[in-house]
Image: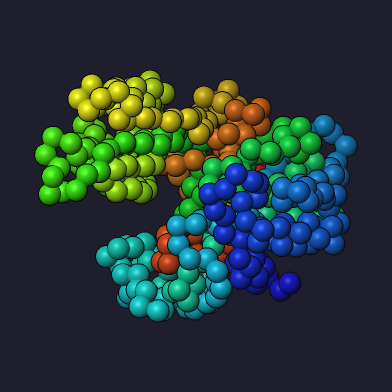
Length: 403
């Protein structure tokens, strides 16, 4: 493998898209990438193990210093988002010459839509060919961790404590941490390498819940419907109108939460709508869930008991609560970036990572950048130099952790 970019392209070319399912991994394609990474880690000389049933990969690089220092871990996910086609990914390396970026297949990323493009004039970018997403989320993180491991294992002059590596399936469908072996992983703290632009560090995320709303209507012939039809489509629209119009992903940013109807199925006699409910503030999050349930109860008073059913479950919580007692973990990452000449930027994640759930499982785990942009879309790209620089940041974190 000549460089980290070639490694990244190899991983992106392998289909490992996840899907909503009741098994882990949710797709058989994830096994191939897990097995490849396991074998590559063993060939490098790492102590690797593969959960062959569930496609988790773990590895350990033993310390080469005698003084006791914390064991540091790095984690990325091998699956890609099911939001956009991801079969037959064909990565393209190109030097960006300015203007709109023509990715291919009628896919054009304009400077108006992506002002940061101007930062990369004359730089090599990696994109898909426009038919699919690229998969930098999170194969960039995977490649960067693997490159750091390769360099660590090939250069005994780099002094370090124990380094732990983990690759998870199904992060994109919310199950990456479900079966993660925290105790066997062996790290005192870790970083998910799953962020965006170079310099990003996140230790705050949403509190998150999923809600499935079922609306039971009554279908009759529209010519004789008066007094007998209950149109579930219109009933759901009435329910949706009860939710605060401004608390919607299209109108929120920063710490602002939202209700998001993500998928709908049905007809006049019945509708099922899947929502996600998000807020950084735990009290506001609980208020949002209660408001949603109360709206359904109100609609039941109008249309009859059982007309609206809510099945709600929490997905993850804001990891800030678990990270704040261990802020030295964040400070190490910030210093590592500054040592590389990169100014760290700390903002709340408007989403979640495996690190959120792992932090609540006893492994403090903030998130750091991969250098990519436009995740979950055909417009996804990553500058080649960012892949190398994040690998350098990982190595610097390892060095600082051993001081």
